[in-house]
Length: 167
Image (cartoon, rainbow, N blue to C red; front, side, top):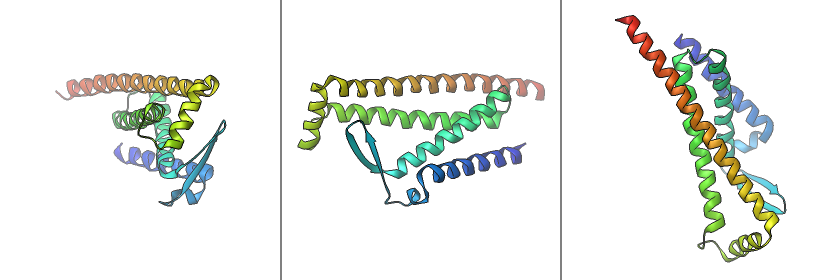
């Protein structure tokens, strides 16, 4: 059982690395690589490591979510890995949400960025984008917490049933 779960985990990690290489290219794995993101009329240049790790965690989460769902949350190691990656993704989205909040409310920003965010606040259409992004991130966090609580409940129930059988 454990060998099979280790193979599943290695396979899902391989799938996440393969998809990351397919979508972002192999050069995205180098430590000093940058990623360009163009949203509306804003142009962001960010390190690609954070996006690659987040994308990989999301792929592993999806694999184990589907696997646990199909197995009706009866496999304890699978549920444990799902809970671990759920917590990891929750933290990633929490950090994204906090950085978005900091960028839109901070007065420690360089003058050019501060002027940019003040102009966004004046232009209501652009500001709505950040509000919508904030709502999407918070909704996804609530979904992840729901998955975490449900998986934890089902795993606890299974562990308790297994301990009664062994007595």
